[in-house]
Length: 211
Ligand SMILES: N[C@@H](CCC(=O)N[C@@H](CS)C(=O)NCC(=O)O)C(=O)O
Image (cartoon, rainbow, N blue to C red; front, side, top):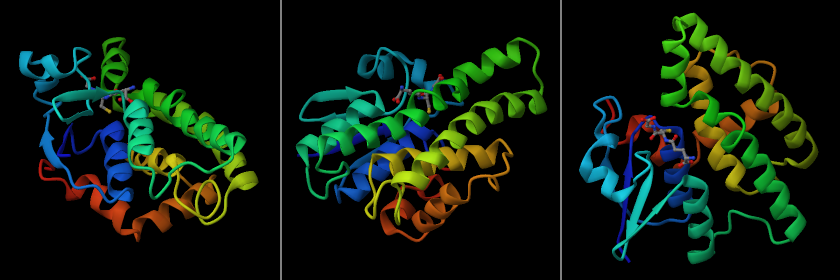
């Protein structure tokens, strides 16, 4: 099966998808969609994803969109190595931790929403304060869950979906000048990821379309 990932180097949802692909050891072709140039709104890209958002993943003439759905598909189609634990309640816990980022932080801080915040009159400092507010609320809760369930990674001693979501969100927090000091466990996972080959290969700076 050949996989094509339509993504953007600095997009958090693209980054989390790349991490999952890399952790699964899957080869894929990367095709950059320049969000700054508005390519996501082009007819060609909207034929792939009518929502005009990255990532989109193509395989065997099919297209998958929405990074949570793509990660679930990867887990079902390529079960090894697993990115979800075996027990149903543990799987629910991992999905819940990932959803703190996927549902409750990222959607409030994506490009479209930040443009709307600017349209309402916010300057750079105002945008950073807006983004930091939701990152703080989410990371406070996630830190508590990592304290309860974490080991070497956010949940136990192997990377899971939560780590795929977390590392891009930490990258984004740095861009918004958020001080990560209050969340030492999150910081430790991010540090571990920095020396893991799959996370390194997925890093925005390593992508062909990076600045
Ligand atoms: N829930 C979607 C969100 C996708 C999303 O927001 N993608 C952003 C980049 S991180 C995007 O394509 N933004 C383009 C735009 O806002 O025009 C997912 O997880 O895939």
